[in-house]
Length: 121
Length: 108
Image (cartoon, rainbow over all chains, first blue to last red; front, side, top):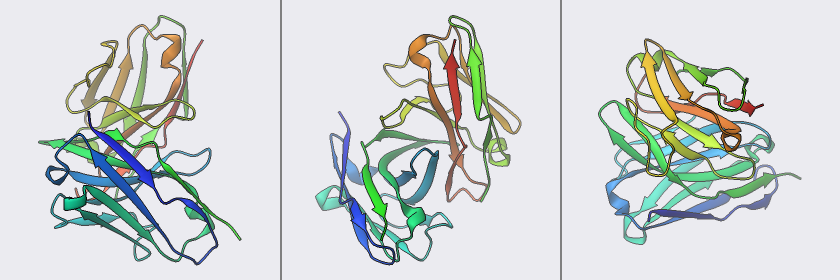
């Protein structure tokens, strides 16, 4: 069974950095694109960033572009999100998700349980 | 990038049918996927592609698409279907992903 486990969240001051990790198991990690999705308290889901299987294509939401960097280590079956210049509005539960695709369809399954990032002074 | 628009809240009587919609330009090109999220839990995929259900998702959940609108239909809603539902799709460029704002479903 495919499983994703996030880690690295915590309380951090505005302007500081944090690195999230996502450990994958139960599937061939380097066959799939991976994504980060976040959810601010009481709000909806927001796509943050995605990376293809070979890191050949990477995308970011406008809200995090130039501050966040996604990466992966296929040998370690791990996904990362380096978050710099953090703002209070980055406070959210951060999920990693495996992307499946076929034709004109893409879907996220499974999702991890999330890691909470709180940006506050 | 593009946006996906969902009604913020929908209600349905127990056992009745409800349709949750998602509108956006990118839906003219790409299929939506749908996620159910209950309080304190991670989202769960319920529909993907033209109309596909992952293993374990009841067949009362179905999906459809027409023009710029994707729909999630629950036929015979149950109390346990009360949750937030989100649609997701590639954006118009195909490089990014976008979520709808979510629909809170109440089962009366």
